[in-house]
Image 1 (cartoon, rainbow, N blue to C red):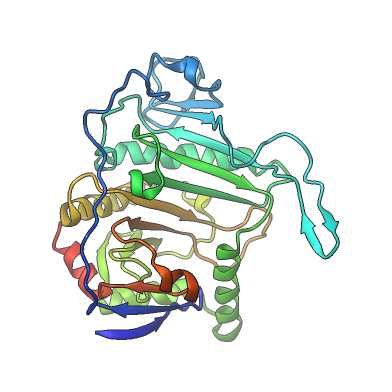
Image 2: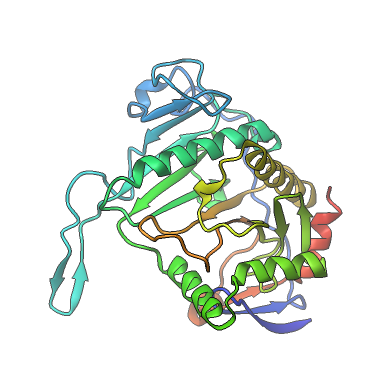
Length: 334
């Protein structure tokens, strides 16, 4: 099959071409890493900044000096953006610039360095959700900030540099273009049809089932119609919700943890244990009021392909797998 598919959210075209030579390049972390120099392991606290906050196994905030933590939040000692200073937007001729102000935090998911299959544990992901919501609620009080990125880079080919389980939060003074593009497409669709684009996509995927991976009463996981990468999987709430912080029912948080761990398990079973992947949260901008046209979601992308010259020069993605086949493969990897 060779065809072009248009992503209705980003309005970008993707080439689906399963006739090209294609081999998985699965990157894995070693299970016998040296923990003596790991900055995130207990006993090596001198290697990291003082914690911002700590949480117990139930997601409740505890004293930052407690040794019984389940999740610890620290500032990144090599931050992309720094929390100090003013934005100071300026012009330089026709160019615009501003100071690199923001926040960059690391959320250490467990004291156990070798807990490689962390996302097989639903309880751990519940703690992650509650900690992220708490950090977003805190950072949104900073009027300099516009958007908060939350992402996990697991494995060397994903960009991860430390194998101890963790994810990152970056608060930005701008809204990223990728998010703006999503919101623009969603707004145009809503203005024309008076319905949420994401909700319509979810309804179609649940009806067609050809790209469905798994579902529960509150969430659905599916391979997007115009998937950019092999086995790319999205997780969306079935009920319309624009803000990740709106999941305040512990049963729904449990269902989100359940479906996310299920997807990661399936990817590991289908592609090989301990694969590299990126997990990204897409939620609404901090200063937006309630919006009916946007829908928060999680994107998970296993890192088994690399960019080539065509990808870079055209700005298009070439996916060497058929999305319907990828979804079927993951469904059967239960």
